[in-house]
Image (cartoon, rainbow over all chains, first blue to last red; front, side):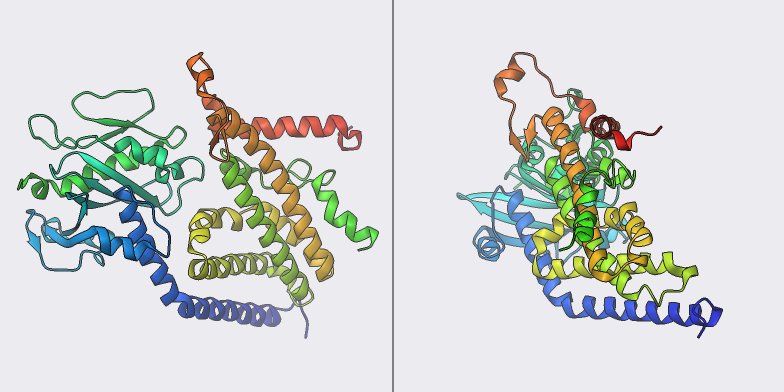
Length: 231
Length: 206
């Protein structure tokens, strides 16, 4: 058969595409359960990082059981509702109308003090970014934070998941003295802002830093009714 | 290993370097060299991908129709990278988390396509595999050199460890912000090329 002929070229491309598609489908299907398990452990580790606990893949689940004392969903009015907090994906919730969205809250008990862990989701430069932030029982002061991302530039935007960035948030407050929600700003290193707490962004990762800034405002802002219910 | 294969493996480290002589893969050299660690990860991944895609393409080189060879090459590279990523996700999740951001950069790396087109399509599998390893290492060498200087002067650290003592900062030393921005990578690559060519007169254009 003529190797440069149209028929050969056509058959060749069909065969190779089908082969590659099969290979990818089989790989993806067979490895899916194992991957899902890894993703769940990774999420647990991110939650634990937000309450300043370092974990390994093997002890993450045990630490989670030990420290996380309650997990539930809150609706847009801040009331506790039905549902599984762990399996609720903020990305899926964002596609619903605002009034129907539910937001996961995890409660942790550390040395007898209650911490609230809130979930965040936003956009970075190349793809989604997300994270967890834990608040003291005043529902205002940050106790710890963890960020993650899908594909931010290594060494630049990707630095948001490093402790050098996340530890800046500790002790910062989301509400001003008058009790209004003002969020925490992420600014260019060296800049300041009036009227709200701020942290230094990543140099060279400006768009990602702005993404974190917007994510804090939108995602934590959605919890505002819940955060205003003081015990 | 005979003389010819040795040349295939080691020439890309110096006089046939993919970055400084063939001028390939510059874009990813800008993207991942602001720190040393991602530069090394990228170097290892690219080496593995070029070696194995070279091997596969070389094995099927006699059956590929000339008109669609580029698409076939792209398909092989993309499939290879995706399968590796899926396997890592299942069995080495932490590694995959680190690598996933590089996947797009590996597929679009011109060195991969460049070597497939220039070497693997016309050579036997074993030399092709060696050519892939050699070019990957040659690329990695430049990445590490650039990453070393950018991290040291841009962040004052190496592999995340602080190297420039606090006392220097208190005395007025400041990190060079330009170092972590992409243009500085170009300037550093140019410096490497400059030094390389002044040492090796054969590379100088007449």
